[in-house]
Image 1 (cartoon, rainbow, N blue to C red):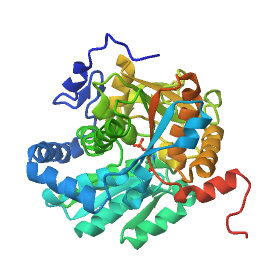
Image 2 (image 1 turned 90 degrees about the vertical axis):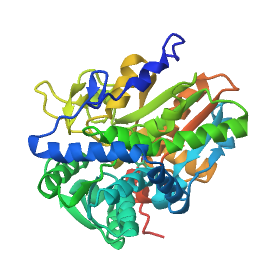
Image 3 (image 1 turned 180 degrees about the vertical axis):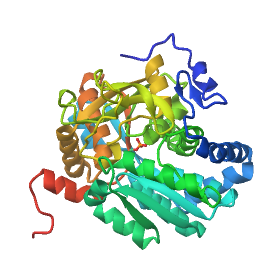
Image 4 (image 1 turned 135 degrees about the horizontal axis):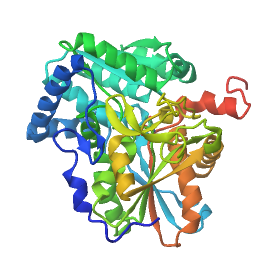
Length: 413
Ligand SMILES: *Cc1c(COP(=O)(O)O)cnc(C)c1O
């Protein structure tokens, strides 16, 4: 599929409407007990969004605390390998705490402070959002509690320790599959009983309105920088953008500034052990399990069985291991503005090793899915094609997972 010339991209800017809908997707499906908190948040965010002082403070901290702008790096050897397309990497791995998550954590942390909240609640999958939230809470002088599935705690022990060093309390979640979905459920449960004092800092472009909008706004700094950088470095717009899609925040963050440009937007989901195995997190690529439903307050594509029970997901990367996808992606997919593919665990592990050896960069396993997408798609593209892949984070946290998958022991010399 290529970008349709007939698509009027102006339609994209009509959403979300005041109910948080993106066409038939999105919205806010929460229990009555959460409505007052959500409405308070919506009002506070609408005010902050219009307030130049708030925006300036956010941008200043992006610069001085998070280390932005991150570079746009021309990956010469990767480009040669794929046969001519010019591949650039947006280096979110170089942002403070090692991933794009810090952009959103900073923005929402400032909003929490503006709302007079003293306590931050966050959920985390791979631990990157937990670490980013803990860092921001420490910097702003706020208390921080992070919910994390115990399966993810096992996979990402190093990040658990980092959160504790940063002064956060990490609460293990034993229910369900003990991964991100269960952590979000517990975080929302906490919020219901502590709304007066607490701010729920959600880590991806999902959940009830206004979260998908807020997270996209804060993350879209990635694409604004990348657009300026590619124009300066190449003298023209890229032909395509590629990013991995968990909840969808790094992807929408890169894509958003290019939405009206003739640029292909390509999301890569986690193909796990393959689509036919059912053990994956590819919401758009599995017509059996990936159907429209409601999860964690938003209407979107959700992996579910015939009875509407949320399906168990699998990915080698904890950050992509989630049954639903952000509603804006569902909308962009439905109208053909963005296209979605997947990479399996095996393909991601190969892309991981290749990026290490070829470019001298250890990518996060999530980001390795985007590189796997480049390896698959770039050879089909014309030699002068310009591609930007989002290197959403660094891979230090994944060393043990990779070693285990490769049958190696990193502690043995
Ligand atoms: C969390 C995470 C992701 C997935 O989340 P999105 O909201 O889809 O971006 C991807 N890459 C890294 C490095 C992450 O930490």
